Image (cartoon, rainbow, N blue to C red; front, side, top):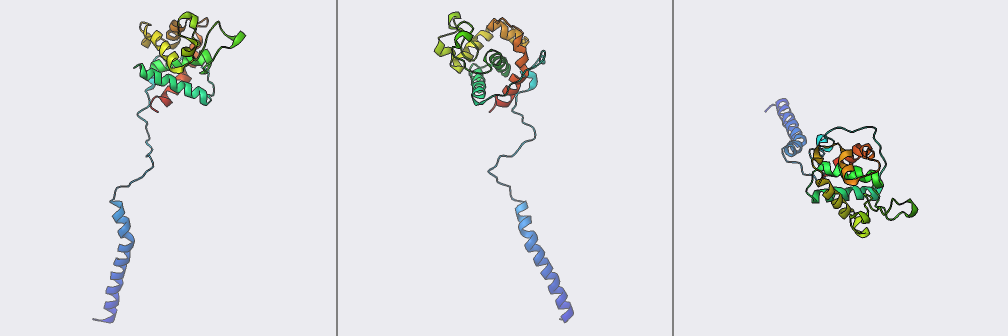
Length: 196
């Protein structure tokens, strides 16, 4: 074989080999499935409750919002858990959390001395003297939420009422329209924590 032809053939073979070495592993791995221990981010989170379920009538009036500390967030999550335990939908949790935001700012309040409204206690400022339960029961977030929800279920058509009307029917507050201002924050809390 001619030396020039031989060098050309070996040169082409060398290029093919080198290209195969560099392309081979990449091509081989491209066909393999990727395994990762990290969760894959999904662009749309389908497990969040639909806003039409959380605020079916839209919010009423100006909205208030507070920053929640760890205790307040834990109380909100306890309300959500109790709502699920009662077999009620997300809207019931929104009404419950908005009510608690108005009544106690999601703080599980004990007796406040002279600042106390009669004998009101807990997340919903329920009164033992009005039959809501014992002080120990009322200051238990699950118990107080289930007691509130029991009252809510007795309100005919609560699912279709504006939030403030449903909450007021259960709570019988001196400030019946005050619950409405917390609807957006309550809905945001439920949307973020319902499936967590």
